[in-house]
Image (cartoon, rainbow, N blue to C red; front, side, top):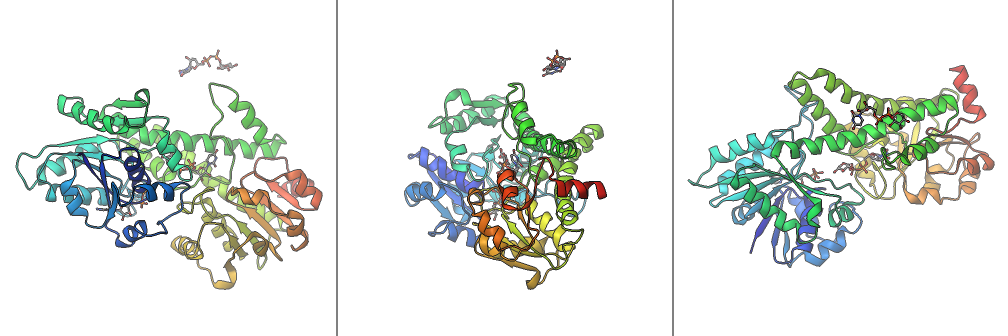
Length: 470
Ligand code: UDX
Ligand code: UDX
Ligand code: ADP
């Protein structure tokens, strides 16, 4: 029986290993993590984060061929194949700070594997890593091996799941990418991993490449997706200036089969743990290879994203007579996108920061994000706020009561069906709506009496006048 160990029980490792266990009942899957609290959450009724369908998959397999443990070394020792899904944040100190990937967790996982192994292992990179990491990991493994003659094969098998649809993405992937050495041992390892995915993924969706292509494809994938969002967000600013409507432009673009319809929703900016981190990493790799023009090209994607968030804050403040000081503003949505409780790099953080910088009083509601998490994010980003300035509340009506404005920052479905007539009645007048996700019916809201700003849509008279004044 093949034994698999997944190191890192986070957003990537947890769901990925659970789906492998579900689809391969004859394989034993152990998911390990150094964080005891994460492991006990995986073993409890309340999983460490919200992800649609995850609980059902875990409940089906846990205790059968899926287990969660903090005994990292035991399960690494026993495994034939080790998937490494540890975090690779951006370095915050030293050479490459602010850009390069911090491989501390990866290196320590590799050293631990070398320490405890006494049989051949296939080590699979799941977390996104800089190009040629496999080479470095290979050296660490072979040069620190405690038992003689152990052979390691490193594979790159990047994960393309999106949060909120992770289980569907894993069950029905567009493609599975496996990169490995192109010598007989490498090809043999690639085949072993292919055999696992073959339990449920059609052969023609399993792509094999060399190691470096697989590593770079993952960075390129995220960079291309983020670039599409920055492209449409850049268009949204132009739409507001000219009277074009960004959703109509998106529709027209998407019908061009050369372009395709996905990832063309203008927004208040992209968030999530991957896009910014991976582009910064890509930029660093370009610069390290003397390709500053290429690096500069990708940097612009992040610059436009920052611009989009600050542009939104600017709209809010200027629309409301150039001051939000002491005014209550409702923030609907704090997660970086709908159907997740994840707030990493959420655009809501920067928007809230911007509004707090202008002394607004925020009343925040998100159906999945806890007060504690919101506090952590706002503190972590160095914002100083006191209780009266930020309140986290339990529903949209409470958030908007007596507010001067409301901002939609996450596209949760429930925000589409709120009774906006009731919301309007309970707000200060003039009542403003700032839709950062383009999910509301602007015409309806204007009929009710709101002054509405929606990203990339023609401005109403009020905002036009302010536009001219500024
Ligand atoms: C383009 C648009 O495709 C078309 O929709 C518009 O109406 C007119 O402009 P065209 O200029 O005729 O059409 O050719 P196209 O096939 O788009 O190629 C333009 C250039 O891009 C060519 O030099 C082509 O070699 C190059 N190209 C295209 C690439 O280098 N790589 C590609 O993957 C595609
Ligand atoms: C992303 C990639 O999609 C996935 O392939 C990779 O494995 C991990 O990174 P994720 O970060 O979970 O997944 O979410 P995604 O759906 O890509 O959204 C990222 C951000 O872009 C969100 O803030 C989302 O709201 C925003 N977005 C997405 C837009 O603003 N407009 C769009 O059209 C799509
Ligand atoms: P991702 O979104 O990439 O999955 P997370 O931060 O959610 O990132 O998960 C990474 C997990 O990896 C964390 O739970 C962390 O505790 C775990 N981890 C980091 N280093 C090690 C290690 N050396 N051994 C085991 N687990 C580790």
